[in-house]
Length: 310
Image (spheres, rainbow, N blue to C red):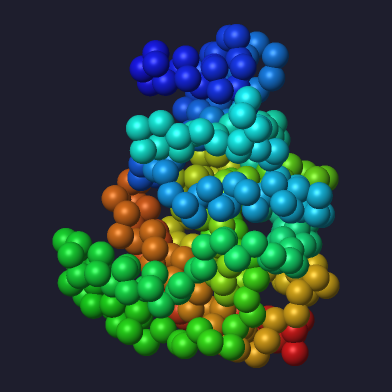
């Protein structure tokens, strides 16, 4: 990062000292850093400037006093939530000094309650982007058409997109868009982080991502949780974890029959969205394995959900 940008950050936030401690793992053109002014720690994010992101930052401020915990956005000297430079949008947020969670009964129960509260947040800001599942699938289908990969797998995924159930009739609410073990931090008090994909749309999109994680983590994440790569030859469904999640989630939200019908497809979509990414440590193959196992376990997912919602 050049000195002019660093000076701009210091000026906008009245920081005398600015030290970059580390760069966080990000994707695409997004960048995120842990910084300090020798007094407090902050997360600095740099993203391509878009109206949707500006709307998200404003919305986060509006719902700050509701029950969901998330980092405070730091105001600039001009009392704005961001500043722009060279077609990028810069903003600072509070650093949540909490560890990532490991799969456990306790965590899945807490997660169910927290996600239920998040989905209960009332949306009064119409500027929040809409999550268009059909448009997302169409874009993914185009990516798969262009990608050089196993023809059989490519055809299978494209057929999945073509047969995806119709969305109308599902429950609409606030969608986080990137729920994972690494974006919900803390133990007794859970904090949601990374709202770059927040939108309003079918809340089961989030649940699909959670179900995908219930079919275990990807090998890239194994070392973080001290899991033995050699013993994990295929994804395993954390069925009990899913039940603990549903039990608490159902106390906050009531899903419709249509929601439950589409849940397995949303979980498969969550895997398919990552299949086309570069193959790192077998992530491509692992997400495809998760995709196939979720397909095989559709009935279990639906029946467990019916147990708590119908």
